[in-house]
Image (cartoon, rainbow, N blue to C red; front, side):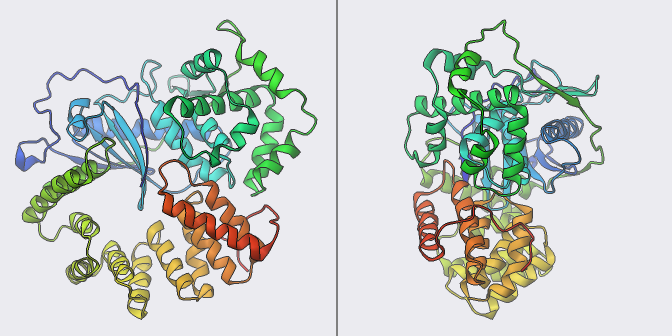
Length: 504
């Protein structure tokens, strides 16, 4: 899991009328929980039905507004999981750090967690920066095949100041990020050369990290407003998978004294005119499916929050609390798949994981998630036989749009040196999650085994580019070692990765 700490400025609605300061399951005195599925979000919440569906509609509106940054018919597939608690006090149960929300990337995809029972995202007074920032990261993975870190973070910061105006059917993009502008004016900013090397900076203080984020925003805001055509060509090259540094140099060839002009731009003052982009806000879908969550499912949500919410709580304390939640859930419904999956993942012993996964498949033979859990347990137990292959094939048959299942099947074939069998699954996983470092790593392995050396090298370079903060050092080192091995075997890269979904 990669977790980005988020100290929102979220403006919460009045909390009068809340009868509990804990997000409990109904059988423990909590209110009714619901799941709302919209075309692009799956929301689990203890808000009332009307507020929950309103939140889904406004998140869809936010997504639609952000899509206008790329224009036209850009509309990537996939859904985002969201957990919404009624208020900040409920979220505070899970952390002793004062936060109002956070985002994470799990093995099942992106996750947003937020607090509050009012989501009037179309009102200027409401801070929607975190939602916009994280959704931009998610959406941009489908738009830009290659993203240097400064561009990824700068673009997300540029778009987090979005203003939605549904009454006028407009969205305004690119408003000034006043905290970042104030920061660079007070403390200066990093040069573009330093930002290109951001990926290599492993340990930074919070002040230094903030300066990098603010600098990335400043550079992106500057080039979009002052060099829009060149920036457009830069993005087009990245969409084609060109090496980012080379794409920049080609796109900005002939642009002189960017550093000097940036200085003048940064100190234009509050009365200076900084251009914004106004685009049409298209209608958003309203076909929501709402159902009540069963009490065991509420315990599963609480388990996720206990294990994932940022804060200094020791792992053993988190695990103890999570174990209690899972035990309660299984007592209420021994066959609940969601809780059983969490329970399997929490077991440390591979033999116990395998025993539990086999039991889950026996009880739920039509669940693709159960078969995927069995495949993972077999892998953890060192079983790379046809039993694991069969489990993985059954998983992708039942849940073809699950990134983890497709990537797991591809990785199985990579590990057993059967790249021809794994290519389709690797391409499918990449189409579903083009910016996922683990998916890219698997795809590069398949390409390398197929003898497509340059494509493998370029894909692995992209995988390493996607290793941002929060990546375990062991995984980072392994992927860099793979890149070094490919460089030694393949020589210089052409800088263009194999196209997602491309064939031989």
